[in-house]
Image (cartoon, rainbow over all chains, first blue to last red; front, side, top):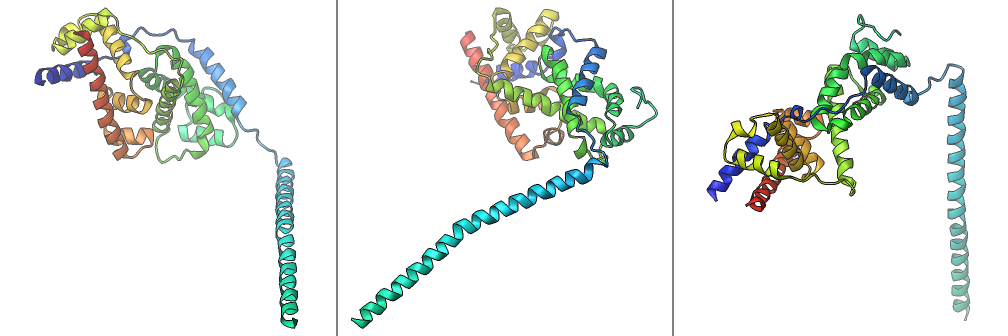
Length: 105
Length: 198
């Protein structure tokens, strides 16, 4: 038991001395080609700068979208809540009329 | 902006990039590419180094808005390079078709030598050194991406717990717990391999 533990300790110690440089190096593309490709990727992902002329238009677009979303949500809420209120009122009226009828009887 | 701008500091170049001058990023690449290549080469197979170094620089570019000049750019970039390697191993683990490396007779012989404490024999020549690297690759391919990163940073590269926590964006407790469990797992893998070898 102790011997196998010692073996394991030695093996582990030796393993961490293994350097990645001991592995055969992989062929690397010429650094200029690699960098040119990288800059191409960077230009592709770079956000396009909006000019000063674009800015008010973008702000107007945002404001319009926000207004449309709020109006739609408001309309939907009204569609859901108002019929319930109407039906509640109808229910109350019906209950009252039934109660009155019973009282009269 | 000229590609070669040695008079500008990293912070000045970053300010140019943030202002929308994409070309100002090129001198930053030129300045730091060797450092990024060195970090990536220590953590992923040789064939993936160029691709992942590329990815690390693209990620850094996309995250430049979050960079604060309080720490050196090189330090910030090395964290991104390490995270890129970590994500590479996480993706590799998710791919079921990735073949697990196997050990042949030469590797088994190296294991025996190393276990007997014959360190000089175990690293005697280039072939033995290559076998050592391959055995390490094999052992690490059996553990998770987080275990691999913590083990290599701690035991092979000699980083401190605090440094690893900073590099991976983890808490020190998480690094300690992961390191403890990963080491136990690795020893289990080596023990079963030695048992099979008998």
